[in-house]
Image (tube, rainbow, N blue to C red; front, side):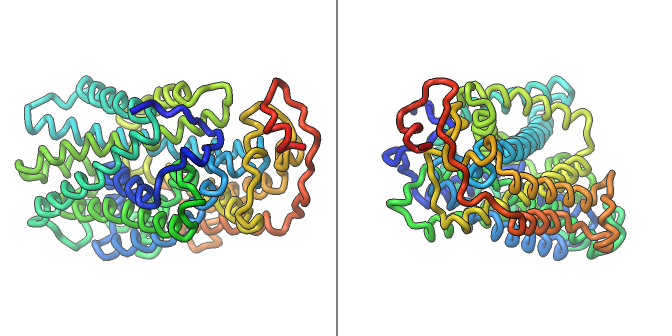
Length: 481
């Protein structure tokens, strides 16, 4: 299988051979891993019972999917990734906001996936073969998982799609076996070891779980969906089919693993830690399947996240090739894995990470979707590539490459979200207005979207004569004229 040569440039229609079924496969197969499963552990660790945890995950995932899934249609029209496509709203330089948000999202989830996958792998090896669960063992396993992840990400979309197809079947079978393995010890009551409701009452804790465990899953894909739909041709597949596939892939790909994580958390009495109790409570016959799930599943999910990171860095630094950008971000992600293992407390780190990035990312997604509706899904694909080609001009140049109203709207939404967030170690001052309930994603999205709608937009956009800093293709010159 040849290595993918495309970065964030426009994909020619003859190369856009994927189908909506492929989209379901990649969203399902890549998410059936411990990096997603562990989010199902968060509600039990917050002190909720089974039904409270399940309802929080269901509500958060459905609401998040409703907001996130339409983003898949943008790259279907532009044939490039979502952060580059957002240049139609933010400007060809302002779309760096989306690239940075996407880079941070993918970085955190890549590190988390390798972290929890490596943790479970070492603990299983300890039970199976008596391997010492010391720093050396963790370092070696993390390094091997990271290396396999880099290979998958560098080879690119086609290898990741093939891997996801296999994982969609294989991991489903492993999770079904897991239900049988942990069923005898399952309980629906709140875990006493959690120490009661994390925020002191049911509804504030339930709202926190809805955002941290439910909503955060779809929001993690706000910049990722376009990585897959840019390879689907709108000439052969309708927007309706692609949207349905996105809905199905996100719902199955997030609910199945997260609810498995919730189920096993209660069965293993995993209140304060997930990996250790999960391995300890496993019957001997399930240790090998658990090892496969921890290793292969982690490579599939982290590979897609690292692939997205490479695209985002490629978009930020156009001179870097996608392969080089992927290797560079892999080093940073691996460093975060070690920091996560040795320096952070799991529940606190995960909760803080997902809540902050949800608050920051939601207004970007809302503004990008509003722009999609305003333009009727019609984009100038060549004009979106101006920054990548180190040129000037085009329909999305606005003011020096920035659409100031869109950027200001996102910044206001992000600030409001951070001021309204409730973290284990920080509570925003706006929480007093919401009764202590974390509504950061609602407030950030509402403020960002409303500000964007109310601020006067440059219409029609300023289209100066292109002045490339270095030779550019004739097609770019024609599109910018």
